[in-house]
Length: 112
Ligand SMILES: [Zn+2]
Image (cartoon, rainbow, N blue to C red; front, side):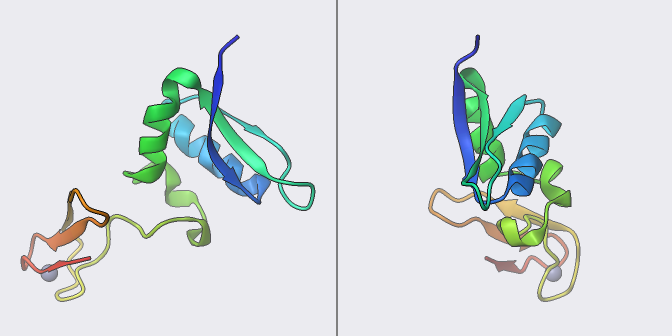
């Protein structure tokens, strides 16, 4: 029996299922408990040993698995178009503080 750690809690069962499939896309087995509204919440659990990587996946680089998730439940997409020249060649510069900066490889414009 594994000890499970909760890594996500939301109102919608559907959302929890998307989080679960995103985690599994990254190779982290996950389980959903609860039916969401109107009966309560839905929660996503992973094995205790996977909790840290699961939280990193959910907090950070959600490039692959979460792309199919409805926008309303997601933080902004990491890969945006450059607001200056429209290039898709955008890199994300990691910052210690809250927000990452994005930079266009084509014109070197930086923004948040
Ligand atoms: Zn640009």
